[in-house]
Length: 193
Image (cartoon, rainbow, N blue to C red; front, side, top):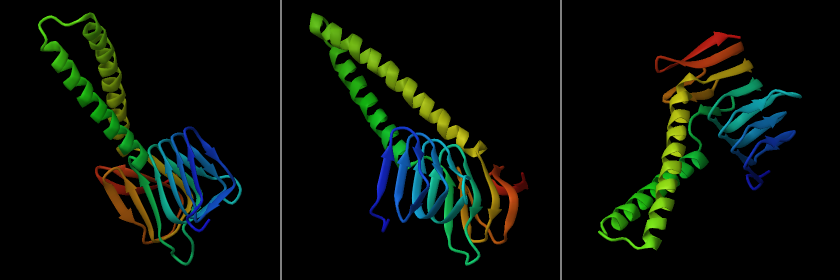
């Protein structure tokens, strides 16, 4: 609590509730409730068991966000986003930097007309690293391209909820029940479950 508590997981996070805390997961996040929390998942966020209440805070996932109830009658601002997480963007930037370094080192070695055995071995290792990084970056790009197809699901969605899916965003002005939220042609759309 008090914005001091922080959970960071390389996989999933499963707990009853988070209030005024931070949770970051490479996997999914499963909660019964979240009050004024900052949640970040490279997978999905599910706040459906127990009360399933999400009020206030900032929630970012890269696949889907589902909750029983989002916001409350006092119209407390709650921000939901299907977007790359900060952790994901840092990982992508680091991979891009490592790829540039590997390619620069390869270029330097290849300029030598008669490389040593050590340089030949280093070239092989660098090419393997280059292939791995390119494949990783392609997968990350695919993940980014899938963001616009994500869907959010809620039993109750209160007014004054900020919703972003990829580059489309909106703030709810009315209460929605049993709704799906999705990006339709660059605009946020609301449908029935």
